[in-house]
Length: 120
Image (cartoon, rainbow, N blue to C red):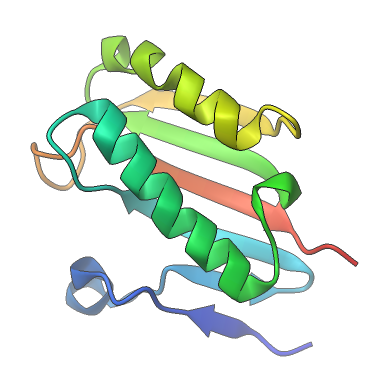
């Protein structure tokens, strides 16, 4: 099986040297994705839109996601995102980890990384 690389055209993809997603061996690995917006909930929605497009380009959807990692510089900003995340993943809940850490730029309040299994 060939490896398929998916780019979203994001500025950091070129600067750092990575792609938004890689499809390999029936799996879709979506890179950590930040979003645009003034606060954590806007950025969460924006990141999920980018991830949703990468999954669609790979032939998958949120229903196929098996693992999600959330990274936030302030763990107290995670709870406002819960309704948004429940809307995206609630019907097909994946395993999840939330990590409090620094992100590439202080303006970013959340980064989301997912792994999905391609539907047959």
